[in-house]
Length: 253
Image (cartoon, rainbow, N blue to C red):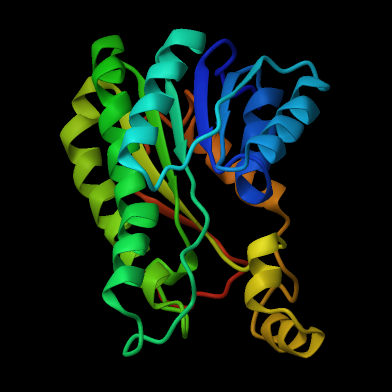
């Protein structure tokens, strides 16, 4: 399917690896002009070179999306070097694990800025140009934890749920301007984050046993869902959270 995003500018954060990189690659394959962002400048440039090798038009801008000033700088540099984004994919690394009763205020503050406020600030920054153009796509990468909290991932559970509520509220506010706002909620995906949380083979085997598909997702499978929501064809899909979890979440709604 031609997603009809050729020539549109897509800003993808957390794009040096994992789901973010796979999303950038999926949009590049559809002809989008890419602006990719991550904290690690060297890793980001290596990822950008891999994308350029496919013929993609890629601008790499390093920065930390948990920092409000760096988000402002990222948005300004994006506009200067590639034009105002038509597409935003807001993706950030997960906050540290920890039990609900044991996390201190500093951990909560860091998780708030990284997971919730990065999404809010990025969306707020791209919306004026999208409204003016009468077209835009915003996709937040969250987690299955917004439907079914994951043990010991307190910060992710809390703040990704906040992103979901923000996404749904924002979608209603901007739909009349041709801007859609959605979220993709990945399940257990073969990324470095999964390796960090489930380091030993026994833990991973036990986890796979709980997944109806009996395997972890490939990042490209999640990226395909994100790319669809960025498409022209998805113009009447807004305010939704799309689970890509291999059947883990068992609820009807």
